[in-house]
Length: 125
Image 1 (cartoon, one colour):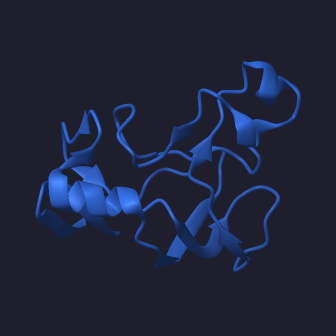
Image 2 (cartoon, rainbow, N blue to C red; image 1 turned 90 degrees about the horizontal axis):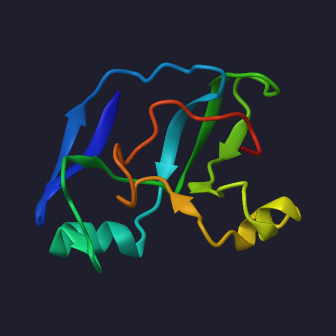
């Protein structure tokens, strides 16, 4: 698969990478992606705030595509992927309000390494 990978400020490359293992999640063929503010910060400054590139990072977390395979989905189904991964632990998550999670992680922002998922969980996780 092709990736858009940031190596440093002003150094973004289209690269080949192995197709990730699906695990027990859903495999999606990405067809469209947006450029968000964090992408611009990584390109222009090598990060944002105190978060800096520490290794090459696959960019693009605002994407949509078609399901290739996965439980609960039809092959070819159009989907939009949420890069948000709530912690599931604290009060908002426990109350069913994961969108208000105070410990939210966003794929491809560099909060944790590796900065991009190789395995994606099932819908709703």
